[in-house]
Image (cartoon, rainbow, N blue to C red; front, side, top):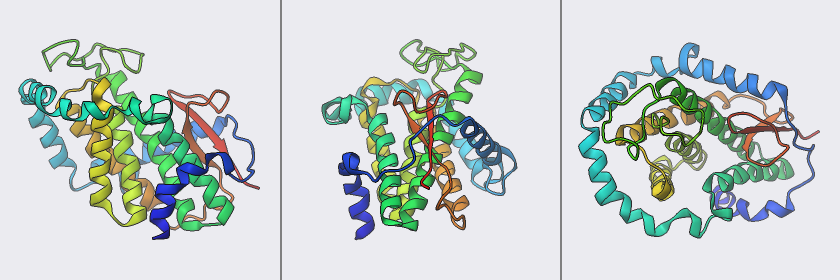
Length: 270
């Protein structure tokens, strides 16, 4: 029960965190994330291409791409409107669920340091790492593929229209939010030992956000698969690590806390 109390209640203590070393840009933070992505994608024992479910995931995404026009039209007409009344702008701080998520991860770290809670510390480190890995992988893939979003074309096979803007026309594949949210909620599920519950929560959170986003169905499903793989990877990687005293890297949009595609901050308790 304590774990559930922390997960649901820690977001309310933003103003009362313990004093820790000031968050500041870290030149090594980018290296850590890139190295993490390299292991996850290519060479690590838990890399995506070595996952026994990888061929099934590729086949599923490929199959969905063949019917993207019809499935996405159905989604836009029949599923998306169900979630629009619950738009994130109505209840999330400053109308941005990303920022709320980032602050929650930082608050979890602060609470873990204050109470010297190794279990929560593993959650905080894994969650921050998972979200950063998710953004780097998804945004990098978007820059390579350049797939047009469905609000810019009705042809799901328009690739190579690269954009450097996060919400540009050619940034459809694959969904960065689906990847980041599933990575985060996979870590939550591991921490609470309720993976199915938090998988459903992650999908619901993403659907609510989607009132202002546009993707083909295959983009969203690809993000789900990759996000799950990332969450499992970072949680397992941190299983036997002594994290107390290690640098904590986290995603942030707060000015002055580092810079990346999204911003990376780093802090440490001495």
